[in-house]
Every structure is written in structure tokens, then in C-alpha cells.
Image (cartoon, rainbow, N blue to C red; front, top):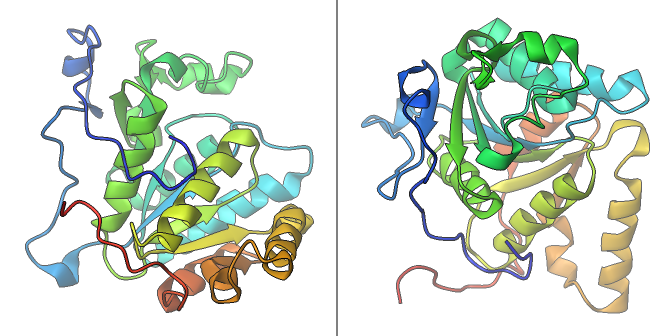
Length: 263
């Protein structure tokens, strides 16, 4: 999905051969009528945080430590996780940690079919041991996994989960590569265009996101990002700060007042 502000792509039906998949606990296949789960009592709807992060652990142990601590803060506050469905790197760490503390119902991984075998981490014996019947991650270790057809639907579904979440729901980016950056900047653009009104936070471990923050400031100074939109991206130094920033989030004055989905 281009980061130029297009609204989420329409849901599509997975064309996977799903005979075996449907019988495995914890697997949900996307269908055209998919709607994120909602509770009839808004007060009991859990806060949901979508975490963007790498399928690599990074070279510094601080990145894995940050992922674990974020999950610990989320467990303490009964916050649910939506993530990219991988079992290795920071993705696997945040999911495993939260499941171990809050149970598998607190975690929902969304992964495109072509990435299933790769984001299990073929180089990781531990990740392979946790694969369920050689198909998908074990529900009891990684929570529910939804298989979708493509990257567009993955991002749409994760965003839908956040928008259906309770107060304080939003998006957090841990350290990651190209994919993490693309996912992050797309939800930032969507916020600016008024497609969603949830907070977006970068968890800046050992200065990992310093370059992005400098770029945002430079873009404001150069006249390509409005001064009132500088604050769309919040910066946190740890998981506790990230969760608090999402709780306290208020839309920037520069967000576009556009109508989406009503045409």
C-alpha cells in the first residue's frame, strides 16, 4: 500500500488451500465479510496496540529488552497486541512475552501467506520448534494468527483492529527495517489525512529513530510538513512512555478534515 495516503484496501477472500489450516486452533482466514471483533459494552473493549517492528533482533540487546518491556507494560494494563505474525526477532519477542503474561487471546498476528515460512525464521531452531504442525505458530505461544493474501490486506486488518480498540489504542514502532518504516509512515500519513485518529509513537531505543525525528523537524523547517503536524509522531524512550503517549494522544490541529468512506 503506497504511503501517499490511500485509504485501506478493501477486504479480499483468501484463496489459500485451507483444508488443514481450518482444523488448527488459533488460525483465522480472512474473508470478504471480515469485521474486527467488537464488544457491546464500550467500557469493556480492550485497548489494542499495533506494534510495527523487525523480524531481526538487532545487534544490541537493548532492542529485545525494549520489546519485552513493552509487552510487560501492556500486560499490566490489559492491553492487547496486534502485530505482523512473525515468530523471530522483535516480532516474536513481543508476542511471546505478552502471551506468557496475558494468555494467547491477548495477541493477534496477521501475516500474508507467502511470508509464513520466512517469518517463522528458517535460521532459528527455537522458532521452528514453535511452528504448529509445520504450518503456523503455536496458538499457546504466539496467540491467534490470521493468514491473508497480501501485504495490503495485512496492514488494513491491523489498522481495523486498532480502530476497534478501546481508549488508548494506537500504533507503536519498535526498531526495524524497510517494512517497519513503510508501515509506520503509512499510518502517519493516514493520521494527517484524517483516515484515522489514533496516536502514533516511535519507541526510540538507543537513538534508533533519531534520524527520522531529525527528518521530520527538517521537513517542517523546509516547508514540506506543517508545523501543526510535527507532533503526529510521538517519541518514547521506553514501553511505559509509549503507552502513556497513546493514552494522552490528541489529534494535531493540522490534520486534514476529510471524509473517507462516505462517498
